[in-house]
Length: 115
Picture 1: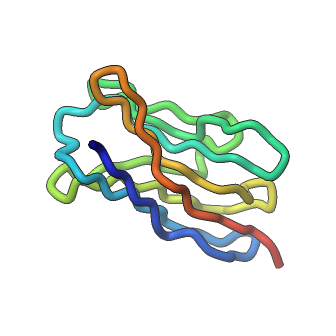
Picture 2: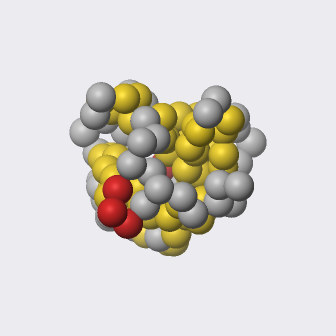
């Protein structure tokens, strides 16, 4: 069973930064498909950033240039660095791993961008 635990969310002012972490209960060294999603109130869950294999990454248009996904295989942890945050970035952020075609989700961490 794969367990994912997100952390690092909180309240931040517009223009501020946060770094989210997703700690996995398994080795992530061989896992290619890892992603961050978010779900804002009243909206569908959407892809924010992800690894797609061979070191490639992809980002939602709304976060390009502001967010960066990274990973530390030694710590079995994936990060999402979020800069220049906007109120519309307010959401619960989830990490997602695909392992042998099964998707695993964490419980999420809430990010609120507000004055």
